Length: 166
Image 1 (cartoon, rainbow, N blue to C red):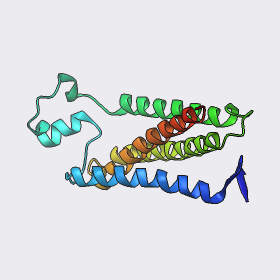
Image 2: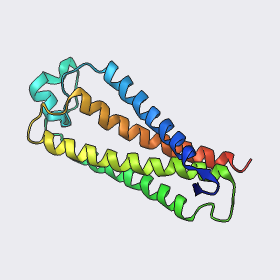
Image 3: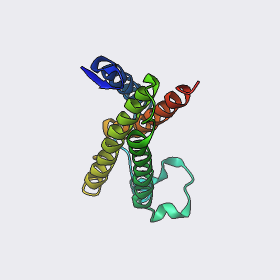
């Protein structure tokens, strides 16, 4: 069975394995480095429950929330997903270079991981607003891993695309 411009389903599985490998490496790196039982989205909660952890925090930490940053993260994810989708749909349509199909597969996985990142961070922040101890080490590594995998797949897609023209 042919998928895209001569690539078989096995090639798609190879790209899927590479992308999942990137996610797993980031997840386990974050999980092994961070040992706190749970993490705070909001600065004010960190200040209230942990007294700032011995750090000198800015005055805005007294009433700062994660919501403005959440909008930035979601906005960045939307931009990456939109550019990746547009590149898949409109880019390289007049070429039969296999590397373009490879790049499009990386961009497709970028979209998948980006959507998962948005869903995970929104879900965890909603849960966090009901229980500040629910953002555990596992969920922290999951959300961060999905976000950085989205960016890694995006970059790999465009690197593959650029190398296709050499």
